[in-house]
Length: 65
Image (cartoon, rainbow, N blue to C red):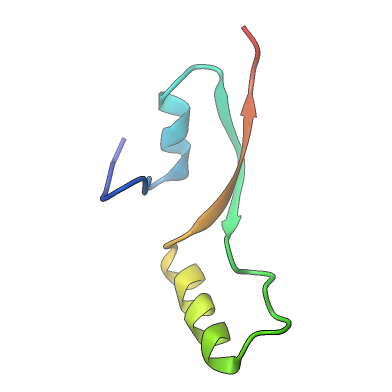
């Protein structure tokens, strides 16, 4: 598992090593679908964030014991 500054994990599947009940179902770029109501400059910045993999939304499945 590779821990970087703060809470950043790469790859996000490293979360599964924390506890045997945790499974990563999916990870998608955080700002992928944010297109309406924001300026062109912000759209570019958010697209760059997604391309660099800086921020993702992670869907987890946590199993009961």
